[in-house]
Image 1 (spheres, rainbow, N blue to C red):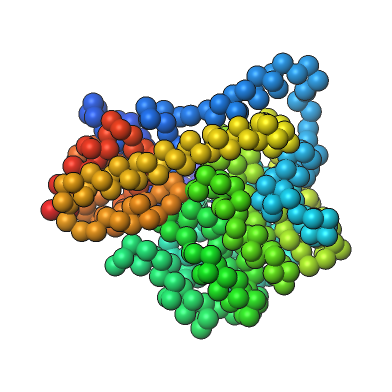
Image 2: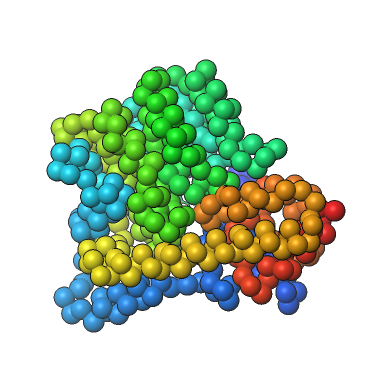
Length: 403
Ligand code: PLP
């Protein structure tokens, strides 16, 4: 007998479960709109041309080695990550920003959750309903003292933002010192972001009610194709000069470096002294958790961001990815309109980033599986799984299941 017999088996991750169902489906024509990874027109993973080029340069550089990085990460990477996010901050702001390299966006959220749990001891974190499923799990394990509460976000009737509901709930129920988790852009899973005017109102509310913003930035440049546009909300909050905040930053999607685990965590403090103290705690946590972050992907990102020419090339790669996704949104919408599929489908083109919350019900999603089309039971579809070859088939199947 085992000491572990008392354990209940944990449920598997629904996304990875669906991917294996898809892999086992013997149908010749099938479509996977499941995981949030970019796929090209052939449905294949895409190594960004700029990344490929830099990999060759790194491979030929005799000076590179595999030594440990400092605990806070590769300095040129950490600085370029900060500058990309905050838009080349001036010296005064830079002195208030503490940054360190993390195990991608997941590791950054984890480190931030644990750090805030211990340092600010907040009673509650407000997360959007719905949010990225892993946010719940990460805060469960890394911030066990913090209660998770949800603010309304998605309006099922219109497949758009329930801004009034969000603001009303936070206004009435959030308490000073509570954390609020905000997706910097390309909200996962809904693909719905606040407008700039709405972001200003959210920042007003954070100031007025003394809420502590925790931004998750997993799609900078990937959503609109423009790195500055996608960082607007974070920069707006910072520009007020009144709010301290943190940001978890991922380079998985915008550099296509998923498996290399490249990310950063940033804290914007009110003073340089507070920044230094916070950073010392973050480095202490980092030492205990991972000692030091992985070097290869960070080297690639730093190489690109520190060279104006390569950075411009990378921005072209970003436009290819965001452009193809927008084209596929329009193509799916066009096919559904051409089929006169019952319902309104405009939200598919209005939503942004990797995902669309299609509004399809769980029953309809399960029926779609019989048509060899795979998406989450919440109705979330990963748009990059669409291409010219399968978009018609997907639209026809949707048309069939909603009638
Ligand atoms: N945050 C959000 C909202 C995401 O969608 C993702 C990835 O899907 C992440 C964070 C973290 O991804 P990674 O750990 O691969 O950087």
